Length: 331
Picture 1 (cartoon, rainbow, N blue to C red):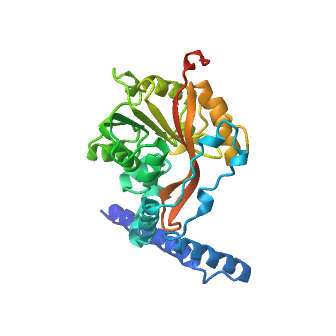
Picture 2: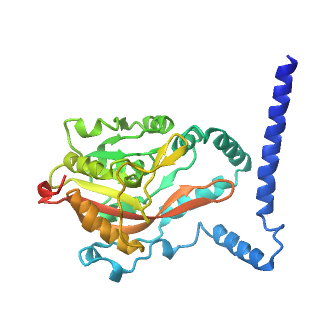
Picture 3: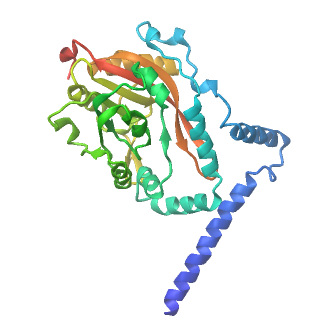
């Protein structure tokens, strides 16, 4: 009995110490304990920028230099801008980041589970880390469709919690999704999406009007094989692939709580966003039997934590269709 009480006391002491440590870090980053005037000035500038995140337009997130795009890509670039839905996501992320006790709980659970469980599953279990790739208007602009456009089937590969699926799903009669994380599968089932196994979706006996592959190409073992499976699963002629890729392209796969290199490593040439977009179109997509219809630059946003209101990566979002001569592409 004494043994159990001692263990309980040790755990409570550790928990209180952990909370005190996190609070001290958060207090330190309020700026009071920054002695250097230069660093303090930079910090206050950063805080001001974060405070304005819900209202700022952030043109740098959408900026593209068309002259740096390849000749075949340049006329297909679609200029995007900050819109109401994006601002709403940022505002919600700011509000959620300020829920101190919720964030402390999230931080504690993450630190305990991260050595054993993938970050995706931890986020699914905690109901945090929702992603934002594009708004409804941005999706419609890319596909050149109106608000009332409708098709039969959507397949969202690696759908996460289904937040982005919902943006696309209003246009489809049937919505299918794949996901490997059990907690994320639960979120998808709650939204009444039809879940398919990662080895099943390409063998259902029917094809899809749109397949979305959002920020998955750099997180799978065999990306070229995935692209070829997608191509064969699209409705002929009218089927479209909506693909998002974080640039610069840095492929890793998540195994448990660790990151490992994929079996097939795609090497994307170029250092600038425009150069990598051009190389993806001329090399990777062409080899897989696709040609470009549209491309835009968008921020890939994720809900933050107690230290950051949100996280942002640079996305290129492509609309691709099967090439007419795709049957001759190398296997």
